[in-house]
Amino acid sequence: HWVHYRIGDFLLAGLRLFAASLVRAGQELVRKPNQSAQSPRGAFWGGFRQGGLPILRGVILAIPILAVLGTLLAAADPVFAQLLKNLLGVFNLERLPEYLFRLIYILIFAYGFTGVLISAARPEPPEERPNPHQPWKMRFLGATETWIILGSVVLLFGVFVVLQIRYLFGGQANINETGFTYSEYARRGFFELVWVAVLSLGLYTGLSAVATRKSRAQELTFTILTVALLGLVLVILASALQRLVLYENAYGFTRLRTYTHLFIPWLGLLLVATLVLQATGQRGRLGLAMFVFLTGFSLTFTIVNVDALIARLNLQRARAGQELDAAHLLTLSNDALPTLVAAYHDPSLPATYRNQIGAVLVCRKLQPAYLTDWRSTRLSEVRASRLLSSLDLTPYHVKNMDSSPVVALGVEEFHCDQYIVD
Image (cartoon, rainbow, N blue to C red; front, side, top):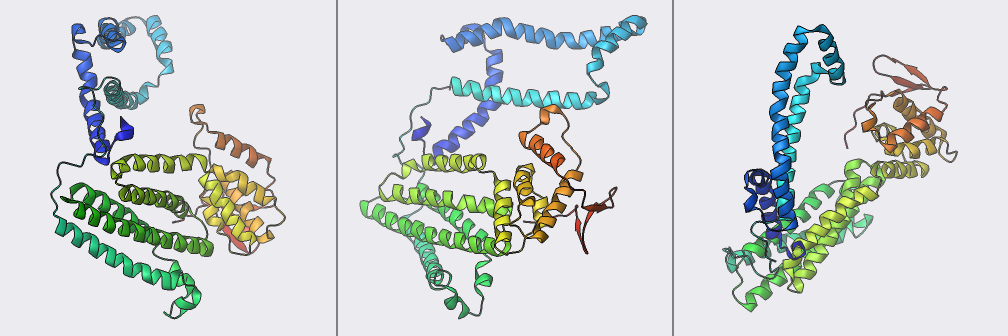
């Protein structure tokens, strides 16, 4: 029924799942066999309680008994003690507290997830399909208060948008009249404007839930004001995107700026969907629209290799004659390494920048391999290791190998230990 959920239904479903993670697994463990539902799922759980649960209880009870008796037998016979030591050699007993801690939190999470799965498979009571067009029953805010809130916010946004149209969207000549340069005017505020858009969407969602509309005229007035609000927010979001683009063109790309750049189009699509749903009287579908927005935004990071994208865009700026922030390239993950290696061999890149990239690669080669366990192996790490091993970086001289490595670049130096803030 989730495709019919309103926003409140999603919140209630989340609370129900949280409650289920606390109690449902325990209920199933103590429920008597004849209380099981007469269904394949009920038969499975009944069979587990009759057959599997006694085995589990027996194992849990046997472990401490075997530990005590085995310790006594090992103390009595050295041959048996050696055998027991060999059997337990796969475990590092010095790390026993760590093992116990891991066992405890694994059991806690397993208990919670089991409760969630049981609740999803057999909801109690069976869930009815919600009506997305049914208004929330707890509407308490009067029409007058609603009009004042929406009207004042629309007026505030209207004044701001007029300034944006005249100055930011109007070109450099209009901005120069204010005494600011184009970069000074546009390089700040994009994060704040994104927050304005997010909070405005939250304001609309809250008012649509709690504001009373007792007549068709009140409903029409609410629709007009909210459509105006959302339309102005879209312009503000466009202003935020333009400021961000100008800032990226001037100072390059970082993770935070790239995340924001990817977030703004999705937020814009959500605002457009909200506006259309409100105008067509389908705002009960806003919960589904938000679910699609969150899913799409999350999948974007699966599809887009963010660190490789940052490296590629910053190198494009360098090819265009702008400054390259090599220190920031050093902070990127192994996903960016193929792009950096390709740039290191690219003759179209100025020699100064190629040397800086070479220093970055030297520093990356000097970094210790923290993840040596095969279970932690990632494809990007394997590929990065092969690429670094194939590079000839002998022309670069490294100082302070034991403390803070420094790569000599002629008269300049490149420090491998640099802390960069987005």
